[in-house]
Length: 62
Image 1 (cartoon, rainbow, N blue to C red):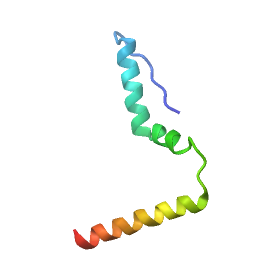
Image 2: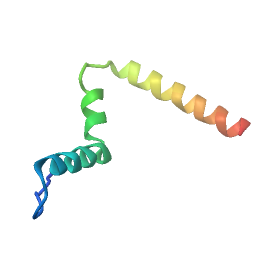
Image 3: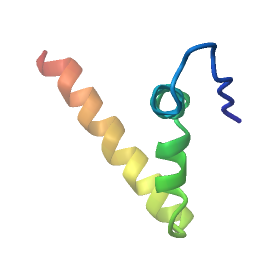
Image 4: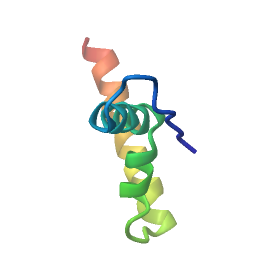
């Protein structure tokens, strides 16, 4: 859970901006986007396998 305490002499816009940065850093937005729709476990595994293959190919070439 992300919390932002408004500092002295800080505008609401600045606090909202800080809150947005904290949400991005925590990975909450990415997690929400990922959970928006149900994904079958086989699809998750397939995507992870493809990602691993690409990563292995990059390390071999690079």
